[in-house]
Length: 65
Image (cartoon, rainbow, N blue to C red; front, side, top):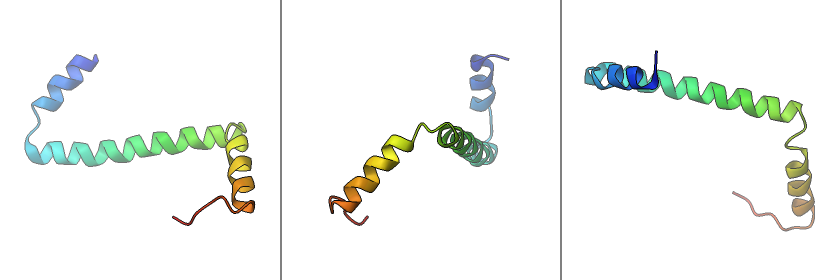
């Protein structure tokens, strides 16, 4: 199956089916993103950013969100 096939299939969905697909895809995409972040954390790819954020917080250079 190609991207074009998927695009054609999606374009043929009824509105309620498209809504169901959208909900499913958002969950699917979020899960994939979470998995990537977890792999990056485990590999230490975010350590430098975390250390920088902690240092800025300790210097009073952070603000509450």
